[in-house]
Length: 266
Image 1 (cartoon, helix red, strand yellow):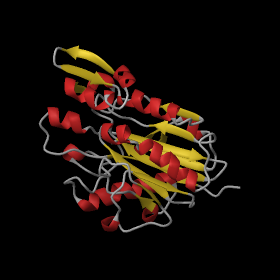
Image 2 (cartoon, helix red, strand yellow):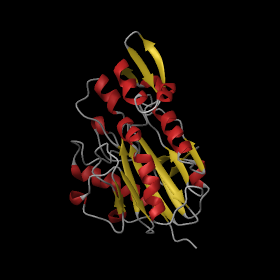
Image 3 (spheres, one colour):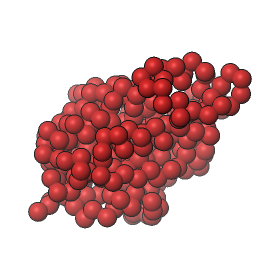
Image 4 (cartoon, one colour):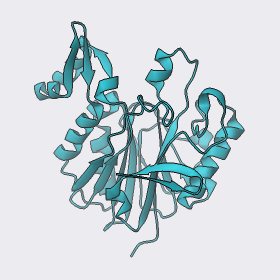
């Protein structure tokens, strides 16, 4: 994993994806934008109560960093589900489909995932020229959004044996306290899923969301995957977090953007 500055935007990049010359990607931080107050400064979520023009400018800066036009950045109406859409061309944001994953083989489109504790997962099969991205909170991860995204890439000609994936910043186990009943939702699927929980106190556990998604990628036989292992909840100055905002009593929170784009390939 590498941290670097592109233009004026500090970004996080996974070394596994950075090694592929036909794509660009970035997990953007909260720095380099124009939003103020609790949204300071690179809030990319229109779903927040931030000023629309500021969110638009922030997303324009993201596009400039990725080398695509502002109209080429697409994101979905995320609902913590498993629906994955194939992107052929950009859509108006007001017509964004309800989904939590996207795949494409179109060049110069940026697939953007918004998160503030949940996990952004970016995918690329450089041989087939196919990319994907998904939003994996605990519910989506448990229900299969990662596997569904991989399957959708395969319909475009990708092979999981050639696919590289990167798990972006998300809430880490040390920050993710849950009730005892939360574990039951996992162990009823597979008793071994209890491995991703540790005891906290008599009534609480800590859940390893990133480790759980690593397990899913391993089970899906993804060729190479990397977890950048950054706890957005603990990164107060650098990343947005819904849970942190809730615990501190803030009325809203910013959304961070993670994106991947495919260049012309041979």
